Amino acid sequence: MANNIPVLTIDGPSGSGKGTIAQLLAKELGWHYLDSGAIYRVLAQAAIKHDVDLADEAKLATMAESLDLVFSLDKNVLKVLLEGSDVSTIIRSETAGNAASKVAALPLVRAALLKRQHDFRQSPGLVTDGRDMGTVVFPDAESKVYLTASAEVRAERRYKQLKEKGIESNLSALIADISERDARDSQREVAPLRPATDALQLDSSALGIEDVYKHVMARFFEADK
Ligand code: C5P
Image 1 (cartoon, rainbow, N blue to C red):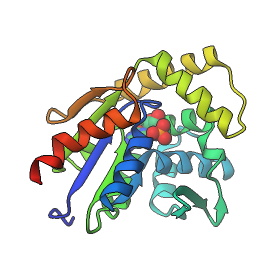
Image 2: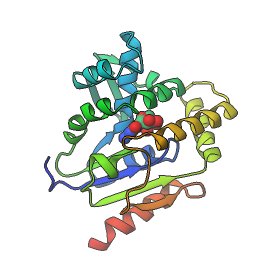
Image 3: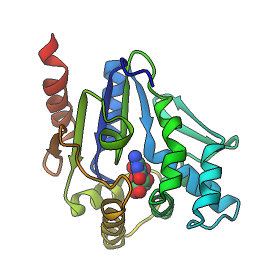
């Protein structure tokens, strides 16, 4: 691992706004961006496509090692290809998120995906978002953020995001899904969702994206200027 390349990790539960802020920071800093959740989402999608049980740890770990996954930026929008097919929209559904959190709870799967995530650490720097970026994948990152928000606020954001993408959903079902996923992500034995001890913790329930951006920049980047 190239440890001298700076990494800014943004962890938190789904709907906390970490993806939006991570992409904005990557753009402003001119750094690379890793959406680690998308990797778990694509793996679950591949399992469904190839009829692999979402609990078959050994098979899923083998699939994870050779997963044919390509990320590219198309007009600032992340495009995700699985075996050459564009899965950018399908992996964002709540069903796909739930399937992702099932495969993500399997230790061999997480181990198999570590190197793939480390490979994103390229010059001049990396902004990465997920659940265990600051705790497990990039514990030596010098800048770590843990972003959260209430389940209700996160469900409302998700509802709007899905609507914008033309995906219909139901708010109370979303709150239930988010709470179920939070519970699975924070109670699992490997790499559970939790703030790194050295992370800047922010609650975005009442903060706009610009406020979160300002807090992060002030804490990690502006002091150097
Ligand atoms: O962040 P996103 O909602 O796309 O993540 C989908 C699922 O992938 C999460 O619910 C979580 O279970 C899993 N995940 C993870 N570790 C990460 C990123 C995502 O376990 N670093």
